[in-house]
Amino acid sequence: MKRRNNNVEVFSVAAIDLFASAMGAFMLLMLISIPYFGNLSTNPIKECPVQQVCPVCPEVPACPELPDPSPPTQPQLTKIPTLDLVLVLDITGSMGNEIEDLKSEIIAISKLLVELAESPAIGLVVFGDDGFTRPTRSFPIQPLNQLPKILANFRRIEINMGMGEGENKFDGESVYKGFIAATKLNWRTNAKQKMILLIADDVPHTSQHQPFYDAVKDFSNADDQLFAVLVPEEKDLQQYYGRIANSKRRVLLTDSDHIPLSSQVILALLKGQN
Image (cartoon, rainbow, N blue to C red):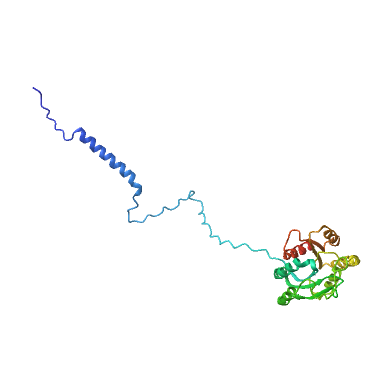
């Protein structure tokens, strides 16, 4: 006869395995969820004081507050105290484009002169040919605070204006007479820079080559007087005027790069100072 087992089994092996599995799953879920639980305590957390590495060393002072950086300053342009500019312009038949360019740029030139000088002024001489009744015509040098009058003079410019009857029957043009008329204008005695800018597409009349060279040389010998000439990109013209503008105070400019006339004025002043 088989003997009875008197031991009472509260849990079977299968039940224990199930319980252990459940506990393992619960602990795994807790480990996953812990980072998503915030600080549930109502007591504020105090930051720990910074520990000094060396207890006998003095405290390192806090970094001082730096002022806001100031904006970069623009370099101040040294202006010419007084500047007189006289434009000597060829108004013969071939100069139509140049005349229109000057009329359209005179305001830009005026603004430029205001930036370059504390007291700028501008004058104008136009010339044609000795075959005309009146080879030249002059407009006085006027400070730019009289800009409306200056603009009115420039807007009146046209081919052969005010020259009377005649024709271009001589070789060359009245470049020399136009230059002489410019030197006789009402230049201000206190002007620190006096500049004549000749704009032409021809040379002086043959008999006036030497007198023109001598007059330009005499004018540019003064330290405060500058001569500049602007001509088209023609080899013969550049060679002729290159021989005239062969010193520090005489400058040759060409429109080969189609630089605006206002920029040519800057170039002339810069080159004349070097």
